[in-house]
Length: 116
Length: 115
Image 1 (tube, each protein chain N blue to C red):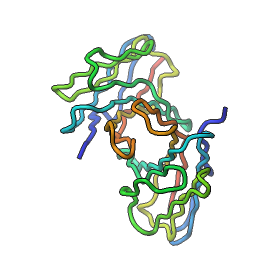
Image 2: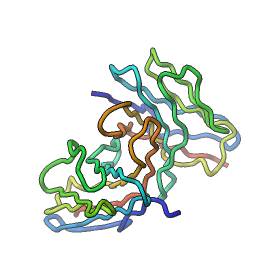
Image 3: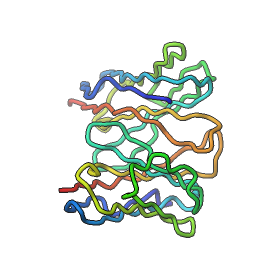
């Protein structure tokens, strides 16, 4: 069975600085998706960034980028030029490809605080 | 277009009572998922509907939980009778018909507290 581990329950960053959130996972599959989701307080969880395992190039979405190390089964999220609106709970998630259900397997989350 | 909406946003009930959570998916989304996060732990999959049919209910904790999706539209998740360990945040997500890059859209969650 696949597992996702986020070892940082809480992180803090100064506004305009860069922060990296860690995520490791375990799987025997070769093709899969990895995601970072963001949940602001009392609001909907939204997709931040997605990475396909067969793509070697790291995904980037504006100030958000990932460092995907397939052999090490590591998938960290880097947030550059942090803004106050980045404060949220961040979840790393895994999804198999080609299964009957596209269910997500989540980590325990990292609560990110952004200091002004 | 409205996103995934969940009702209520919060619910506090006593042990032994019944609670029904509701999820309205995005219109046209055949797939509907329920997840749960117990305080401080990971978000766990509960079950998956494709239209009105249960595709995968392997994550349902026990028979006190009953999920329905009448007519393939909104879904309800009933907990009867509720126990203390059922407390947590229940998330609903929906997505379009299966595809390699199908994205799941989440609701804001229902925070359930059983006292």
